[in-house]
Image 1 (cartoon, rainbow, N blue to C red):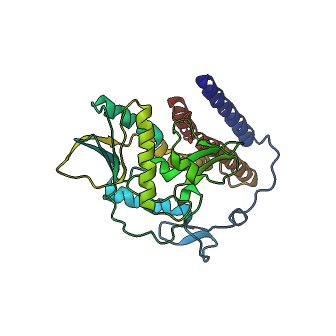
Image 2: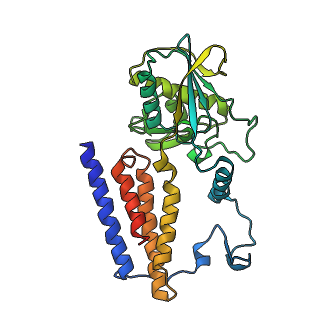
Image 3: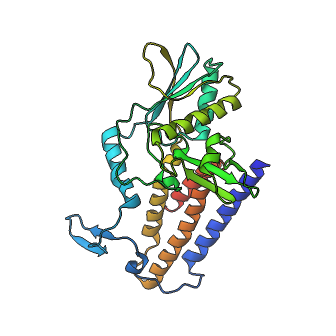
Length: 337
């Protein structure tokens, strides 16, 4: 049943995408006059310079704005410069004589529920037959104080940063019509923290910042991590109970059992590919005449809708299956040739 639903959605998006592109490119759709670039930019600015640094086009260049997501560009460039293109995030796991598990994180941004399921399966395969206490060692990050400008809100993009950030430090929940809080996604089991963060929420589906109210970010990240690992431990058939919390690995009492390397490369490169995709289409269909410009703008609007659909699907397991990823790469190649 699940495969039938996946392929139905896949086919629907595939057909809708190419129908819309066909009409947009062939000019079969009634189009309004193309708005100027300055009208399209209401809360932002841009600047384009030539190879000598001379500004050749700009909009709102003298106004100050909150940088927002544009900071991802210098952040990514800095990461590539310092860490190198072959760098991979890892998470280390240690077990002591009491079968207490220590999780040492190094900032893996994609330590999601699917990864945790694979991790526990690997630990079980390596002979771990019991997990009692679960501790988080967060000593790899040097930050001692709250980052200036941080906000406490429900928004998942305001989630705190730490060496261990399961599910992006945001919690998927669904509130039923009877106000019962359940997990918001199939791959993530219910944990106690869900009821706490979704307290007094109206019926609906949400992804909530783990620190929606003022809280100790380190303690809350540890609670989320240990509760999720505990729930998925039992789901994997590994028995055991014990304490949870933050605790540094005792060097003389623990043996390393696994070092897990992030494998979700598909999701990590999706936004970069999507941006590359848009630029590819722009360069191919842009024109100096008015008709060509209108087609290009309308085509980009349609592409944006299609990409947003794919990004929405990426929140669910159906996008994390191979045929969705290859469909995505096929689109990239089509607009390059």
